[in-house]
Amino acid sequence: MQDLDNFEGNCQEKSGFLFKHLCDRPSVDRCVVCAKCVCDFHGHQTPMGTQCAICLRSRDIGSETPNDSIYPTAYHSRYHHYQSTNSFQNNDPRVTISEPGVDPSDDSASNLGDGDFTEDIAPDDGDGNFGNDPADFTEGDSEAFQDDSGNDFETDMGAS
Amino acid sequence: MREIDCNSILNKGRLETKGSCSEIATAIAKIDKLVSVRIPLQISYTYAIIILLWAFSLVIFLVAYSGSMEKFGNDLFSMFFQRNTFDLKAFGIAAAFSISICLCFRIFFLEKKLVGGKKIGLALASIRLFGCDMGKGALLQLSLDLSAHNKKEKLTHKNKQGPWTISHYYDPWLRMSGKMTDGTRFNLLVAERFQSRYRPHKRKSIRERSTTITTVKFLAKPGTNCQLNRIRNKAGSLVGLPTWATLKTLEISNTSLKLTASTSEKWSFGAKPVKGSVDFLELIALAMLSLYEILNLANQKRNA
Image (tube, rainbow over all chains, first blue to last red; front, top):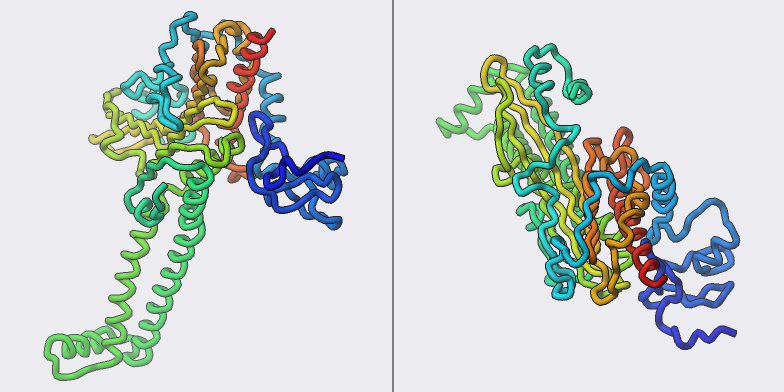
């Protein structure tokens, strides 16, 4: 039988968005199926009693995704969908790679204090310009606006 | 972390704090509740009181004065200026009118607090998203600017196009940084780039456009010797962003990754976005997943 004493006091469920890791919340109950300690986030009330997310999923109760509040799985499937249909090329000019050893964006990562803003990550050139943006006002707009024919703004957006 | 005073933040329109992720999330949730539930409720109540006061005044006016403005005016004048009589009916109408004016001011000030509703909600959703991979007591630094995007200090420059003067604003309203349990540090920036086109002559006209930009930056855990530049040929194919967003840049260096994407769509956030708008949290989540996949690949290469 699994020794649960080592984890007594802490939730034993693994969760996370980018990577799975042990939950560090205090446990409040045990899963009725696998006897795992679970916190109030990871314990789900069922007619049988409290169950952990894994046991609940394995029983496939409905189409419910019980862990979504702290592990938004829907974004993972959407990521894989968009990534597979991605038209982004590796030699795309938008990808900029600094030379090995040169790291302009890194102001010495080892010196960062916990949670400090490392730098101003504003994506502009310091002047509020962002290059060519499809939403920018253009010369074409200027001509279109000469005649105020009552076109609404949304129509003008298409013109640019 | 010192206690966050929700009302003072809504009055100032700015929150800058550093503390544990869960504490900040609780404080922001409180502000969110205030903005999305309590203040709209207070506004509704105030409108209801104004309507009741006006109805009360109208009934007295019609019953006691038979709708005669002259009679009512005379009574009011004699009560306030000649001060020889006290007319309860005229006083009641005047009092109801004065209170309703005060309540209109109250609505005006309450509505001013509602400006950052969407911003607060997205900030809270982002904290919860990043918080999934942060430890219980992990520190989070947050800067949230709820003030209007077209404030003077946010004006970056002006230029002319024909008869039009275009004002360019840049409003970096959400900044967040912290460290995940695996040692990866992150920075998040959400900014509004706003253009206002104004023609002073001929027929006056103002037109506006805005783009919302998000930048997510990951710094690999110091000392892991994560060689990101070795995977330069594959990094692009790991990016997966929603079709309604435009990738601006993906910057890769030895130890850091930075992805900038933008959208001109109207946005909301969460599992059920408002009809006709996109889920902005999806863009942030997918940018995070894209960068983390690249980091993972770099680590796999290093271990291989």
